[in-house]
Length: 349
Image 1: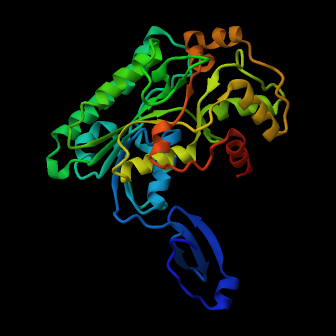
Image 2: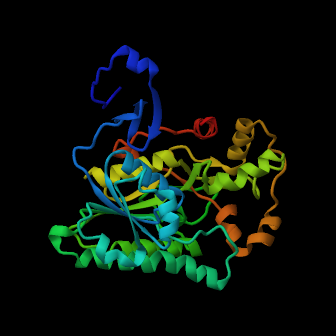
Image 3: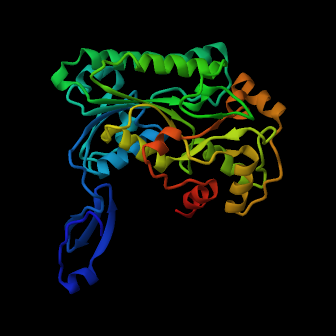
């Protein structure tokens, strides 16, 4: 077992013992005695990572991975009760939960900060909702950066990984975008530009990683949580024309990329958080149908989606072909490079 200490047990003990999965590895239990064997290679240095948006779809998996690796995690949340339910102290002894407004108490002494905050965008966009989408990202990022900058240098985090989105590039059915591509001219591109600008005000002594995240896939949430129920009742199919690009990433790969950005000094600046092989909407729907054993023949008309989401439908109907050029240059190893492999792994687990 790679990364585990070699421990020898009497054969009778092993045969009569059983295992319990744990965030810290594998627990062998017999007669009430627990022995934990770590299944992960320990990092050379234990980190203290403060995370905004930690109870979200990406954040909660990141917290689990960091805690499993023995790192200390400071969860910054608007709901203490929700965070406590997701990360109970008995299972996550290295996780501390604090309110978002208490940044000044949590940031000092942190090794790194991960900023994942933001109101969901797949909803009907009223003027008030659009203001909240932008405000929720920019105001907290601004406060976060101000807190980092005013923290004494000896207590200041070494790295800030701040989320952005592939919406930065605008929408296109023909162009391919990498980290050097210019920004688009629509609303989501504007939000991303201002979001990144707020993060870029961090002190020069702090390494900044701007992670432009694509559509994150796993069965516990995100896009698949909306798509799978339709397929299971034989009502799945392409959304809109089906020609729009779908720049996706498996949640496990994204979390690994975030951890690499926290620990590897060569990871800095803009990095696209997407898999190397984006697909069109029709292809992901066809693949999802095959994996689930359901047909993919009933498209969702553009007009129907606009009736439900209004202007917010553009977040689903428009797309862009984004490639992770910088991550590949840095040698990041994607576990899931192709959509078929990713969906099979998700629904086999």
